[in-house]
Amino acid sequence: VQLQASGGGLVQAGGSLRLSCAASGVILTTSTTAWYRQGPGIQREWVARLTSSGRTFYADSVKGRFSITRDNAKNALYLQMNALKPEDTGVYFCNADPDTIATSYWGQGTLVTVSS
Image 1 (cartoon, rainbow, N blue to C red):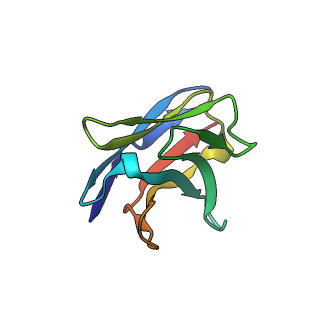
Image 2 (cartoon, rainbow, N blue to C red; image 1 turned 120 degrees about the vertical axis):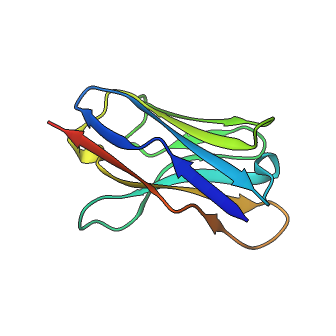
């Protein structure tokens, strides 16, 4: 199983980025998928979740600015991030929890840096 996250970079506050997570070995349409982030000196925190049925959930800190989506044909997960703030800086990880087995898969992370 591999989750390959990409799309991070340096952006000014107020800008946008789109993160991608390409999955192999796990089917995202039958998994609960999520994005997490870990800022400097901060524990990893949950950002957004997309269930296999299509329901979405967001942390209060990103609600209205971030959008989690899935491309079923490409077996890929995305995180559209708008109106970025310096506090959004961190390494972003994609996660997939298959509905049928009790395990959790993680990508390697992609760094997002938001300058003020």
